[in-house]
Image 1: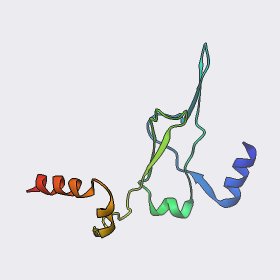
Image 2 (image 1 turned 135 degrees about the horizontal axis):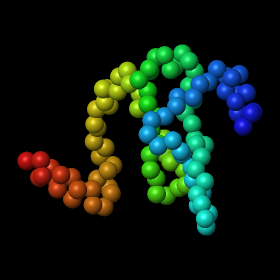
Image 3 (image 1 turned 45 degrees about the vertical axis):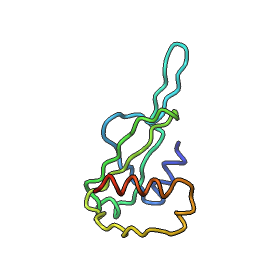
Image 4 (image 1 turned 120 degrees about the horizontal axis):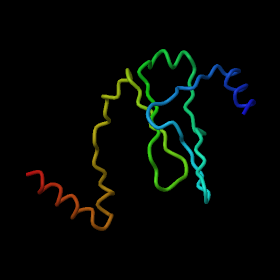
Length: 108
């Protein structure tokens, strides 16, 4: 763990910390469970100052012993959306035209 800390210092990384549940990993034994915070989110101080409202959440996952990390970044403009473009080749997929028809009829 000391080596990890040394790399963080050398690269100028800081831990973004977290909100909610403090642990990201667990191991069940017969008589007890071990909980640890193994997974972390790191950033440089410059990045952190650009996104001061950033929050890291530890999400429950049923398919792993690690919790997923969700990083919500305040101050980042995510309003741009790429316009939808229909691809003619999708029509070669069996069932595509039925799906399109169902969705189209549901909107009218």
